[in-house]
Every structure is written in structure tokens, then in C-alpha cells.
Image 1 (cartoon, rainbow, N blue to C red):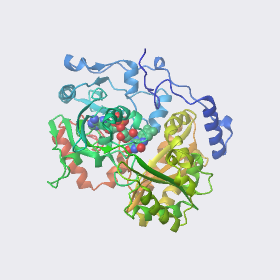
Image 2: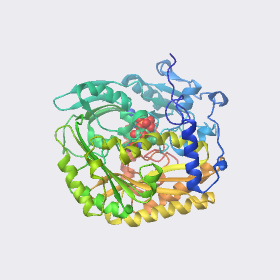
Image 3: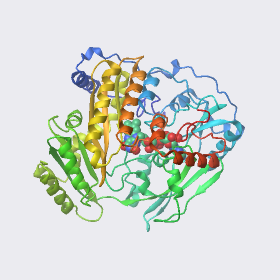
Image 4: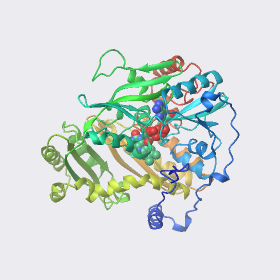
Length: 538
Ligand SMILES: Cc1cc2nc3c(=O)[nH]c(=O)nc-3n(C[C@H](O)[C@H](O)[C@H](O)COP(=O)(O)OP(=O)(O)OC[C@H]3O[C@@H](n4cnc5c(N)ncnc54)[C@H](O)[C@@H]3O)c2cc1C
């Protein structure tokens, strides 16, 4: 049987697309919300690899490296882009100008070392590639003219759970393993990592750690960082491996240097990860509020009560409507608790008291339903959450810019920040496209001192101008996020798209310190140039 191939132009496998009915529903829904005629959508066909000409590879690796490299067109196309909107838009326009010269498929750590050793001497850029689900331009070999070529280093062959320590509840896992394979390997032991980003099925452990991904838990264990016990990283200067420790106060953490380094400081090859027992007790509830501000006050109170729900997501009324979780008149909070050890009813009971004190309304019968987390409003939202990645590519092909940006802000500044950012994005959509768009907000993660607001916007552009429109909106929205005191990313990473704002956000001396660390670990500057550390000569 032929191997199932992933799309080089979008999300998932080549054989996956929206059904005709679903496509019609999505387009009619957006025609209605954007106030345009459904006929206004101009749809680009799915690109055919046979129509795309790539330049000949500019470099000639030695046999040790050539033996694991491919110059196959599909492979080079698949490794040109991640999943950001400009990535998808250029894929549909058949623009693959920055395709890697080669794709190296590492199956062992020695393969990684061989690629880095050769590339360092040959002046070839190396882009570590996990699942390629980067939403911020993290994997595109857009490395400028200072290199003799570019290689995408695919880590998908490093895909094993190597060791499980049941006593400490941890496992040694190779970095290239994808989410589903990782969970499948842990399941027979009754264990789980319980790190479920929306991109779970097409992203890898190494990618999660390299981008400090945000996962399943809305509170407490928000980023994958919290599950990292130790890391093994191959750099051009050698291998760095930290000790397995439950905690350590011995100076700055070596793991923290690598977490979030986005392939610019080294290639993460293995990690010891902290695991959990699989949950057996659950409780879920949907709670309605007049608007996002009332909801936010209730969420703040729950977030500050020390209850640590696994889910504590707040959707503004329009976001609830678009995801079929509400009718658009009220904000919706999805609240859930889980445990492998004890019933969670007492925690849920206390959380519901708090939200009720803040005007939240819920259906006690739904709360009593053991399947509440997969039925009702929570279930509708969950279903839309899983389908959304397919909508991104479909809407892009129809010239609808549909992007997200996410941030975090302390509670004291939330309201003004939310309003200013939303207003900036609304104005930018209108200025760029000449038509108004729709922007919604939800909280993906909640901390005692503030939420992580996640904005989704849609507006009608046109093919040929989409990239320019997207960039205009991105710049205005990102300026507003930084001006309002937020972070340019809570969990989607920096990549190439967020570099200008990341440089404004971080202390400049810290930027210089990270650049010095890169100079030590990657003296020729070949690793993912332009990400985290500005590209040389820029
Ligand atoms: C539809 C969609 C939903 C998403 N949902 C979430 C979400 O819920 N939470 C979230 O946090 N993010 C989310 N993302 C963003 C993305 O999935 C994450 O950044 C993810 O962690 C990337 O993993 P990956 O394996 O695909 O990495 P890639 O996309 O392959 O790489 C991302 C970056 O990490 C580097 N890298 C990859 N592997 C390694 C390695 N082993 N060593 C060193 N560097 C490496 C790459 O060079 C690149 O800079 C989403 C993206 C999409 C498109």
C-alpha cells in the first residue's frame, strides 16, 4: 500500500479535505459574517507538484551526508514551509523560491552530527524540522544570501520512546516522535504526557520543546517546559546533556537555554519527560456570561482560587457562535477538572460557586453528565477546534485571510489591552482590504496573574494582494500587542514572523547574551539563521 503523504500546501494528509457540504457551509458562513456575496470568493486550486520547478541544489554534500539526503521534489516542497498564513498563501501561489537544496532525514544522532559538521565547514544553513507545523515562519529556509545553500534537517526518524522509568513516572523519548505515536507508546503503561496542542497530530516532541509549546492544560502545566526533566542537544560545538533532576537550583538552567531556542542553538535529539497517570475522574461544565469582561472577572477568580482546572477557556460571544458552541449573544467559559487519583466534584463544585458569584449561568444537569467534556457546548467547541486547521488552508485558497495571534497580559491591564488590540486589528483589516473583517478572542491559558488571550481574525482579501494585506494587519496588530505591554507570543513561538517584535520585547542585553551563546554553540551561525538571533549582516 502506498504511504500516506502529508500535504505540502496545507494541513494533514493529501487525501484529507473538507467534504462538499462542509466547504459550502464554511463559505456561506463567512460570506454572511463578512457581508459579501458567496460568489465573491475566488478559489485557487490545490497546487500540483508537477507544475512547480525548483532550482537545482547549489551544494554537493559528501557521501556520509548525501546518503541520508533527498532531492525529491515533493520532499523539498514539503520542507519549504510550515503552516503560517503566508506559508499557505505562497504554497497556493506555487511560490517555493526558498525550497531547501536538500532534505536530510536523520535516523540517528550520528546523522545529526554529520550534517552539522559538514554544514559548518561548507557554510550551509541547517533548518531543524520536526512536524513542520510552525505557525510563525520557523522552518522556511529563508536564510538570505550569506550561505552556500540550505538543508532542512528532518528529525522524524528519531521516533522512539527509549526508556520508561515507572517509579519516577518519566520517559526518555526521541525528539522526532509525533504526538499520536508518543501517546500510543505510553498508553500500555497507563501513562500519558498529556501535552495536546491543537497541532498534536502533526507536530513532534522536539518541536514542542524548541518552541515552548502550550498544550492541553489551561492552568498550572501550561507549557511543555513543565514536563521537561532533562534534554540532550547536539550543537555544532558538541553535545550538551543535562542531568535528570526533579528540580535544581544550581545556577541558570541549561534546559531553559534550549527550550524555546527554535533550532537556532542546537538540535534537540532526546528528552526525559515527566509523565502522568491517565485520568479516570472528570467533570466539565459550560458557563455563560453577558460578555467577555464579566467572564474574565469570573475566570480570574477561579484562576486565583488555587483549584487549577485542566480546562478554563473563555470564548467571547462571536467566537462561541463561530464554533457552534453558542448563539453569539453570550460569552462562554469551558471549565473542566480531571484526575487519575480522586473524584474532582468538590473542585468543580467550588469553581461553580465562584462563577455563579460572578453572574455565570450553567445547566446543573449538564454538569452532572460524565460526558460533558465531549458533549454540549464544550463538545461543539472541541469539534470545531479539531477541524479548524483544515479551514485555514481552505479559506486561504479562497482569499479569506484567517489568522490568529496570541499573547498574555496581566489582569490589571486586560480590558484596555483587549480593546486596543482588537481595535487596531479591526482598523488594519479595513485599511488593508477596504472592507471590515471579524475579530474574536478567547483565553487559551489562565494564570493567577493574567490570561493568555488568543485572537482570531477573518477578512476578505484577493489573490495577488493577500500577502501584502496579511503583513499590514500583522504589523499593526503586533505593534498594538507590544505597545499594550503584552508578549508577541504566548506559545506559537517567534519564528521569522515575530522577530521584529521579539527584539523590541526582550531586554537588548539579553539579546546580546543569547547571541553570544549562539556564537559559542554554533560558531558558523548555520542553525536556523534569523530566528531568535538576528541573521548576520542584517
Ligand atoms: C493549526 C495549528 C495549531 C497549532 N496549535 C498550537 C497549540 O495548540 N499550541 C502551540 O504551542 N502551538 C501550536 N501551533 C504551533 C506549532 O504546532 C508548534 O509551534 C509546535 O510546537 C511545532 O512543532 P513541530 O514539531 O511541528 O515543529 P516545526 O514546525 O518542525 O519546528 C518549529 C521550530 O522548532 C525547531 N525545531 C523543530 N524540531 C527541533 C528539534 N528537535 N531541535 C531543535 N529545534 C527544533 C524548528 O527549526 C522551528 O524553528 C499550531 C500550529 C498550527 C498550524
